[in-house]
Amino acid sequence: MAKTFAEINAKIKKGEAVVLTAEEVVRMADEQGLKAMAEKVDVVTTATFGPMCSSGAFVNFGHSDPPIKMAKVWLNQVPAYTGIAAVDAYIGATELAEGREDYGGAHVIEELVAGGKIRLKAVAQGTDCYPRKELEGYISKESINEAFLFNPRNAYQNYVAATNSTNRILYTYMGMLLPKFGNVTYSTSGQLSPLLNDPYLRTIGVGTRIFLGGTQGYVAWHGTQHNPGKARGENGVPVGGAGTLSLIGDLKAMTTEYLKAAVFKNYGVSMFVGVGIPIPMLDEDMARFVTVRDREIKTTLLDYGVPGRSRPTLKVVDYEELKSGFVELNGRKVRTAPLSSIFKARRIAVTLKEWIERGEFLLQEPAAPLPADATVKPLDVKELD
Amino acid sequence: MVKERFTFVFSPDTYAKPVTYHLVKDFDLRINILRAEITPGEEGHLLAEIEGEEDNLCRALEFLAAESIEVIPTTKQVTVRQEECVHCGACTAVCFSGAMAMNREEWKMEFRPEKCIVCGLCIEACPLRIISVGFGGGKT
Ligand code: SF4
Ligand code: SF4
Image 1 (cartoon, rainbow over the protein chains, first blue to last red):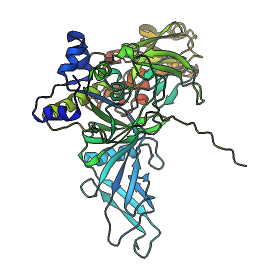
Image 2 (tube, rainbow over the protein chains, first blue to last red):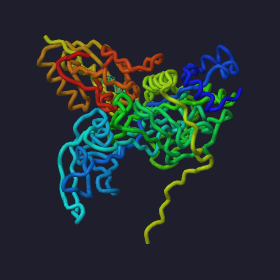
Image 3 (cartoon, chains in turn purple, orange):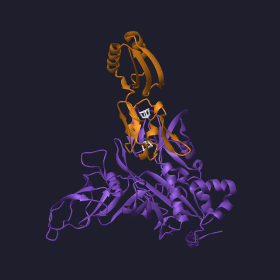
Image 4 (spheres, helix red, strand yellow):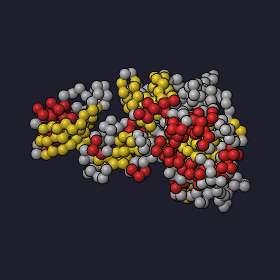
């Protein structure tokens, strides 16, 4: 029954492709059996909408008259990196506005996407070819040249769940963790999550076309901290954070429905990013992968009360438990809460499905695979003499 | 005579104090406990309706402040700008009263103001900053 990308694309173009979301495909396999499902279905859509710190955008402001070679740039008082060409800059999602804790790069990106006016300030040393030394005024997505989202690490394949053994509230990127194991938070969309439906990244690689922030985007590279060597369960699904993706897409075509600034108290700013990835049903192996269920996806529950790099694993839990609202810990029922929105992830999976059904979105076979043997090094610097 | 609703917030150090006893005995107040969530060693909340002479109520509130027990009048109402909610669930992690809870079918966050004890934790927890507390019982 093996199918190729080209065969599936031919069906998409004719409007004949059968597309299901990763949740729908599980139900179909239950009702009709794996083999029958694998024959019928061509594409499975997966999605996630969670806070992803490793996000940001490249922008090109255009040249002023007289021109300026920007040495330092602020967008709504948020510093952007401009150690590249004269009027290019990178605005990182987590960069904070000077003197503020609740406004950062993610807010600038969201406002830019919304079409708002952004206050640009730039200073420069002044050169013969770029004499101007200062510039201040407003820009918008209409006024600037390129603006593209370029996220070094998104779509984490699984992630730990967090709790807190200490006596005080911990304010973390995993949300507020209440004292004495008062709650547990987790942050993937489970069986709907992209890289959990293709655990060995057989169909996802450099150049894969995806849903990103409400428009079409691409996988640019493997993400930072990509760790395919992470321990896996029998079904191939890694237990805890493993593969990651670096993503790219046209910021001007995105919408604030799928790109949202987030503030985590006493931690900082991050950005909710909506990502959807289509998985082609190439063969029965893929059929098995895309029918992964919450109870088959396991992760480690870590104590964020331990400040070190190696936090102790309290327990291995699965997503069926996490999504039930409670997990058992030390003989007690502890409340669980998500941080990534399954509601939004479902919308993304359905939107992507509709794009494919309408023939507006074709699958792109990877130009190169992602590394299958990368590992993550810790940072152990040599002490200064 | 006045009648008002308050949420008392207890810390792990203050939960063991016989507060209601003092309110009845020393200040001649009538207390109707509407909700209580107190687990030894953790922060606890008590929602109560208190009735008595205005003067006594004022002195009782001073007494509670001196005992390091936070008192929040429920005329402060928590509101959520629902249309901006992304249903991430971060607020449900900290809401002990269950006022902010996930609907696990649709995975939408649903707010039931009648359960809220105005502890304020969700306001800090919401990454979109769309939860606020205001005086005067605004719309919920
Ligand atoms: S203030 Fe927020 S967290 Fe506290 S009880 Fe009310 S809804 Fe729940
Ligand atoms: S934390 Fe904020 S955005 Fe998230 S579900 Fe609660 S109210 Fe909605």
